[in-house]
Length: 414
Image (cartoon, rainbow, N blue to C red; front, side, top):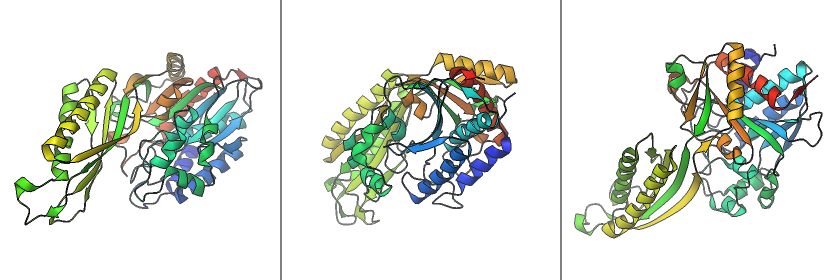
């Protein structure tokens, strides 16, 4: 039986965890940063050691390719992302990249061939931790990333994604070359930590995702008027923070009313000028709305738009909104889900079919090929924090299932 090695998985996770901009404070690895570069070098070295041909595409995604017997046949791609949120954990994304590395090693050392080629992927800027929005690597492959957006989306220092790409040796004008031609992929398979408590609480080894919720992310700027906090009467103020606070309450209320698991979050808010004795003149904040029901998702987003217009009149402020990401709910490939179940049954691993409340590259890849997503448990359901943890043996179980699934999809040959 082909089997992953837990010790190699541990080594990979711990090696990549060193490349963080916040040592001692969790994982901070933004795209096109020094930490990004060092991680790429490590992944490249491991891909090459597994006999893969390595390349970087025009968007910055990293791939290791293993040719199949049928030249020109569509490839089975597997992997995940390697960027992080600020002060996140070491498993969100890298667990799936390590899955790809370990599958490549197992096939290489056992001399296992396939009729279809395999591609092992390490994708860029899934989190949107630096530029906002996220899912850039997969969106580039799916033809959903415009050249103009690379100039519009900027980090907190005002550096555009286009500039960051140039500084990393990429040409943003060629990002269209990252698009995968129709029919060039047979499937995309991703392993990811659950980022929730369900698998652990039910004592299950694995989760097989059937549906990924839809996501809308937007940036909102409210312009009021900065005034002296002591001399400006309450009825003569144009307080941008007051308006933003009402917006936060509205998102919470509208999401609760939508029901059926719909969630809404304002996770980042910046107040300007930011003085304790100054009436806030400008507020910037983000909104994130998610639902498995597209009608409920759109209802929250549309009513929020109407609310903002009314708020302009009520508070005398000016509101601008920038759409950073809009992805509808996605149903993943039932054939791949069935293969997951079959392999787990052979190995005696417990599992369940479930929904993902987090967005993943698999939801974008599903627009251009059959896609499957496998979850491994998260300790305490924690994620996007330094306490994030998944036992290495649990990742191994996921890799074992994917080895058999990949061989079935890529048509194993002697």
